[in-house]
Image 1 (spheres, rainbow, N blue to C red):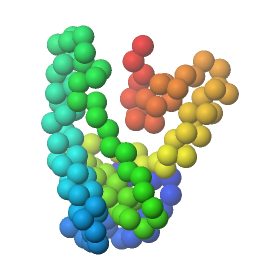
Image 2: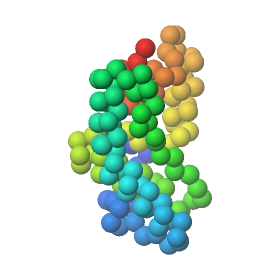
Image 3: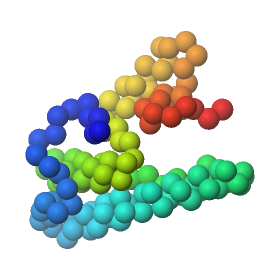
Image 4: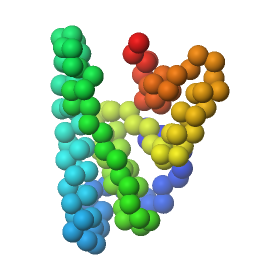
Length: 130
């Protein structure tokens, strides 16, 4: 299920109902679609490299996606569309704003023994690598 810290302001965000108004927004739509479509493929390749104990497995296909821009340009809609597509493929998703994530990381400094990478892995719902 989609786990969001804040409510979404639209019913069903998806790529089909995103309405780009500029060429830049068209490009953003294309990038986000491609990111979602290739996500599972990238993760499987990374897992294969990890299982094969390849020395560079951590950097293999570890590209993320950062959405930033002015208010009302579709960042939240596109992020939710990616999340819903991944959820449809059985991939768990956590939605957080960057400020919420940074606050969680900051809290890790107040916790005894918790380190930043452990907080990030907990957010992703998996144990931290040591």
